[in-house]
Amino acid sequence: MTFSIVARNPVDGSLGVATATAGPAVGALVPHVIAGVGAVATQAMTNPYLAHDCLARMPAMSAQSAMDAALAQDREPQRRQLIVVDRNGSVACWTGSACDPFAGHLAGKGFAVAGNILTGPGVLQAMLEAYEADAPFEQRLLAALVAGERAGGDARGTGSAALKVFGQEAFASIDLRVDWSEAPLDGLAALLERTTTGSYGVFFNAVPKRYS
Image (cartoon, rainbow, N blue to C red):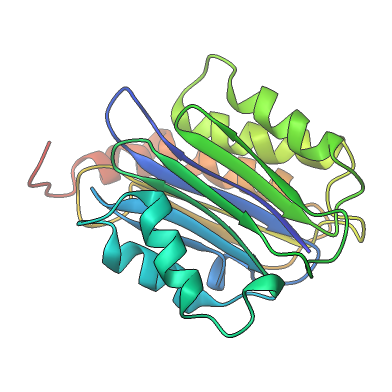
């Protein structure tokens, strides 16, 4: 019931997740990021502890090893979908055999996309291609969602969306959610513009930072 992207920005090491679904409040359970560690989207019959377990392991493990270890502790891995990227840009993907169709994932260099209850595989291909365009990191993440929706997206429509990016600081540089809307991606784009430009952009840039 969800389509998502996880990625590491090779320019500065930022980590991000963007996600959308037919239901409400996708940002509450699907996207998880820790600065300097990794980013995870956990979806289908969502188990948030898969993301927590992956992130807890990734300081000492690769994305693949952390994901495999987390899934080994899950009682129903066949119902889960998981995409993971670590601080080095290594990715890992899992789509369980019991995820509702169409379900699948694709991996690129330093990023991965996945979805379930999609209109078809073209959704994932469109997301992959959109992310690879030349644009700022957060815009590329959002563009992947927009392209996925235009390609058919969630077969039931889109009701909520979220975008989360961490740089080197312990707090997010971008943490946006549209919890319920008839056009959540439009709302997310408007929020991104409002929070990265103008007076709020000036304010946020003045927030005390330890690593930049």
